[in-house]
Each structure stands twice: as C-alpha cells, then as structure tokens.
Length: 191
Image (cartoon, rainbow, N blue to C red; front, side, top):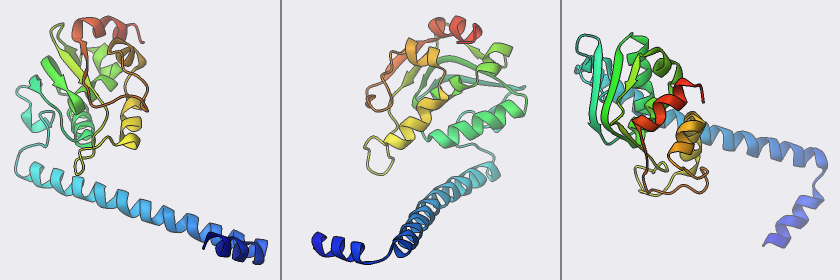
C-alpha cells in the first residue's frame, strides 16, 4: 500500500504536492483549533455558571475574598487553566492572596506571579508547601506532555530548582515539594 502511495506521490507534479501539503496543513490546523476552542468554551461555560452562582471554580476566585484577602490554607489543585484565570482575576481586582499551608498541583501556579510576590500582593508563609508534578489528562489520567510543557514554562527557574523538578519531558506524576521558606528569598532576588 505504501509503495502505491509513494508512486502516486512521485507521479503528480510539484505544484500539486504543494497544494496537498497546504491543504493538509490547514486541515490539521482547523482540527486542532476546533479542539482548543471546544475546550476553552467548556471552561468559559463552567466559569460563567459558577460566577453567576456566586462561586468560583477555585479558591482564588474573587468572590472568596474577605476584606480584600484570599487565604489558602490547604488546596490540592485542579484544572490549570481555571486556576491561572482566577488567580489573574483576583490579582487584577486588587485582592491580596496569602498561601499559609498546602498549595498543590494547579494551586502552585500562583508562583508564576513573581511581581505580585515581590510587591506583597501575594504572601507566602514560610510553612507553605507547594507541590509540582506533570499535568494529567482529566479524561485518561495519563500524563499530558503538551500541557506539562506549558505549565513548566510559567514557573520561575528558582522554583523548579528548589523543587528539584526534572525537565518537562522527564517529570512524572510524583509530587515535587518545595517550601515557602526556601522560595521567598529566591523570588525576592528576582531568580
């Protein structure tokens, strides 16, 4: 079968091959875009419904602020995109966020906001513990490498070093822990 396809491919002209390559490129691009849009639409619908109901998808949602303060005592994480969106909403609304204890998985995405940490808008207790691991596909439970690469790009290098996180292609589902007392100084120095 492959031989037949190869012969056919050689028999058509270069212009036709270019057209086919272009069509395949756009077909793949539209399929991937459709998947991404569908995923984002599901997240947007969930966030809209939860906001309308007066609650957030994560503890970082601005509706959880009391006197302008959001306190995280213990949180195991969840959807990375929802966490990133609600953390940004809380910060843009001017709320302060205190991480006092466990902040695992998607919760640890708060560490990407170095400027807010330096300015004191995000306060990390010395007893706080952050857990970082590979992103997991919610439907299959398997490691999602593209999402893991996305997540790893957003952590400061000082955080990844302190947690002894291997590269995004090597990290697994085992939690890599780092403590607030080990992070604050490095983040304040701009690392």
